[in-house]
Image 1: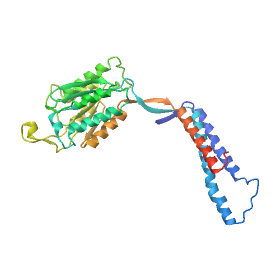
Image 2: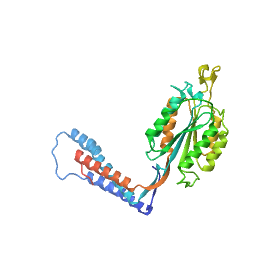
Image 3: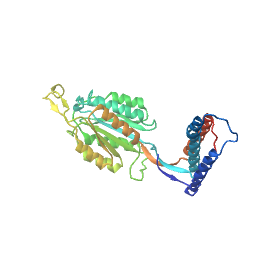
Image 4: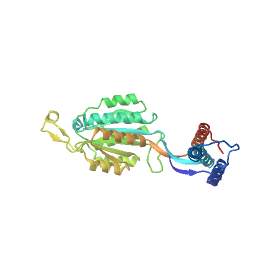
Length: 326
């Protein structure tokens, strides 16, 4: 919750009653008791009366004043900007499955680390968010069309196998086509010109194949109003050996410059992951934000609920300490 405002701010001056109530309660507690009690040990009496009792008496009073403050603020009908799931939100997971994804610099391998991160991402998304899965190497393959069926999506993730080269641009072009088709009946854009959908592109290297360049794919996404979030997976010393390439051992580095340019062109974000823990963290972060939108909501009931809880706590504290409320 952020950006708190009030629909009836002219009622906020009612909060001025809190200080007088607090002063009155303090004054009443200072009044002597009706009946005197004989106490021969004056030192103990001073300790009890002047120390523990004063501190103990403050607990229910403070809770009561907090309840009064929050309850009075509720009368002014507070409103807050909260994040809610975007209507018909759709996400396409676009993942590189070129041979370099067999590299084990990210444990156990780049592809297995990416697959686990995508599974965690899908599991944490709101159930009504549709998720699709597209893999690309020499060319793109639609493994799962956008769906709310998480079991079907997991089956697609389990099918990922590294093969071939890297065609980032063609993968982006296919992802845009799949996403716009999924949103064909709801193509309304937000105020910033975006549609309720996004692409998460994960790749571990530079483009080596394909008919469309990465930036051409990014421009296609931009024209459609689709944000692309890019993840560069792998370290600068990842290698795959001759058993995979039928050639001498080769070092495979991510291409953060190209991935950053794609994200910048589409008003998305770019990330770099050099470990399995980092790629999981990135996907969790995206899962909390990518399918949500800010919305203004009245939160009067929240304030009223907090005020009620504070009042109950104040009454319970008064009962426990045997102090009276104002």
